[in-house]
Length: 260
Image 1 (cartoon, rainbow, N blue to C red):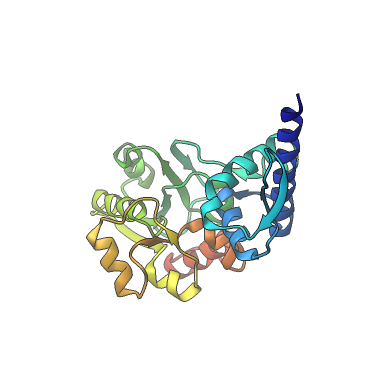
Image 2 (image 1 turned 90 degrees about the vertical axis):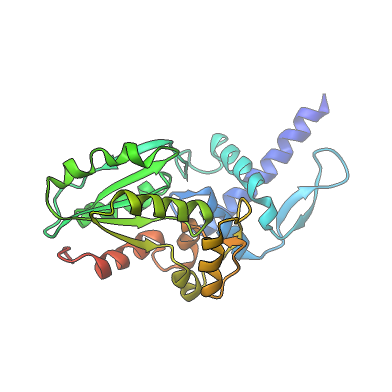
């Protein structure tokens, strides 16, 4: 009869740690991966782990890269139990999501394409302010998302901006989009190896073996480890203003005719 109570206390301890880290991060809403990078950066030996008995928390250590999957579990539970706001953790929503700005950019029709829907709430206010359509493709075919692109452009000149993780899958997304819109202007604005090196964006081991020879060479040429990857979520931690501030700087740099 004691096990459920012990298990509950263990969960509460883990959730309290998540709430502490979330509060320190000082973001009203964030992704689990951004919280992961912040926890790695803290470096404090306060991450609770089980001791010698079932459910007993008597040992703490530094949060480690190997704890990523556990953070997903505890952050989700912390939200469900009310330790952090229920809408605090942004999650991936599969499918094609198109957000149209309130006004049209004074320059060419511009769209930002990204393969991560969880980041939409963070970057959409910037896109909307500059009259840029936001298209996120998560777990869907790019071909399906492209059907309405030319309709939105209305036969006019169009500029397609692309953001993706610096990873084998991210590179595949950039390649596929570039091939599909070869007759339009397409710019891969993030993440690039040069940005990762210049901004000291933390890298973690790729989810799968980086068997893509081009990917490994791309990273090696920039002095980076081809077995590693860098994620857009890390920008929330290492760039002033987070990913929204990062994107705003890129738009000002690459898009002509935007309102400043």
